[in-house]
Image 1 (cartoon, rainbow, N blue to C red):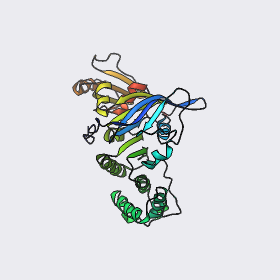
Image 2 (cartoon, rainbow, N blue to C red):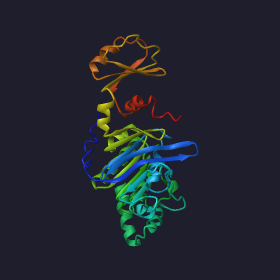
Image 3 (cartoon, rainbow, N blue to C red):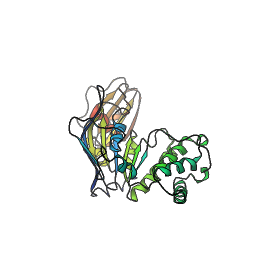
Image 4 (cartoon, one colour):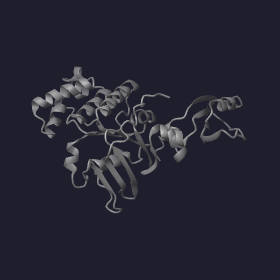
Length: 318
């Protein structure tokens, strides 16, 4: 398993700057967020992990005052000491938001999009130009500064959305599915830039359904399902405490052995049987007795943790 997030936890002793206590949000009969509580420390990256429809985006919108929590229940949100219900402008002033959608103005070029946005923060034109040049260089978009939005690839648009979120030098960066649909090369580039921002002291709140992204970037994770908290903790802690170390995936498994070794646990989904154990040698020995199909031995990951906790795959949208 990669050690890319070996720096995770360096800021774990910073003071809490986001406090969420017993927050709920309903849309008609659907409870998008159900009695959630957590806190985010200054200079850390906190991840909201779960499938589409888990409530991640709704929770994010409540933090930067795009959505209001349910009035009943008495829940509270504090963002750097401000209540989103009464201090929306203050929170927006020191926050940068990269939404899921690439909501850029197709009628303008790259610089035009950023200059228009800089006016919202009353950034003087000369200062905005300097900041834009820096951000385009930082996100490797300098050669595209005069390009129209329709000429950009999907990865370039995502990087431009991130540049826009950083124009006001935010101390809080809100990232909603920042790398969805991107190829691995662009995804890793964005991860690298986010790590640099974190080292500079920017506090980040990230939503994702990518296991690898959550593991590599986040100091702490809140795993959500149907608006509820399932598990919370540091990525390595969740792996160590909630799942066996190794899994043997058996594809096209028509039937599973009637008797399993005492050290092996079975979790079956359709034609895929997953055998978990803390010993890779135990699973290798067990694999010799499997009949038919193909199998693959690997280390367990956060998706396995989620599957064990909920009984569902992360891409289950029901």
